[in-house]
Image (cartoon, rainbow, N blue to C red; front, side):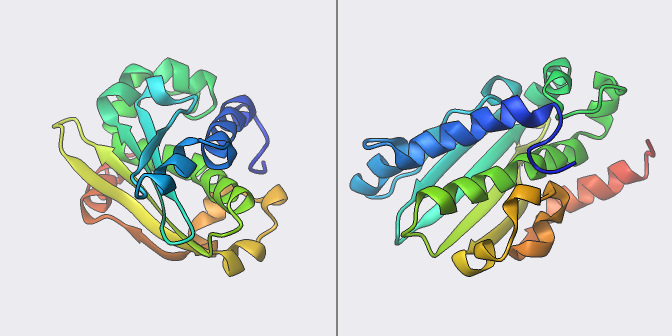
Length: 193
């Protein structure tokens, strides 16, 4: 299934629209950020109530899009995320909690390509942008899930209309998984499915 297929369509299109509005509208969040010294601005998404947040700073000099997932909120909203196609319908909240770091990282990777496309389509002045996902654990501590960069040259080589999100680490630069996240995901993998 391509990037735009399946039950995710409505939710991710809403997310892409929210980021596009923040980047493209006069006075939008990212444009206001540039005028105000490139301060990061919150970007509303269809996943806000599910424990997912996004901030963006997009200027020719600085481009950074950071998203975050709160595991407690994500587990509490399992049914909502299943309805949006983010979490498989055949698992319950206990399973999601046991595999929370893996689920959160997969959630982020499903929507991250939309940020990439939105930034480069709506901000022709951007030559390179940095992206990252942070996860707030059940203990309240925040850890880096992953980070990466994307150049316009690399972006232009990808056929985004037929892109599958699982390919993201292969087409970006400097894809790095955070150490704490890797430890949690390795421990979760030992639990089995």
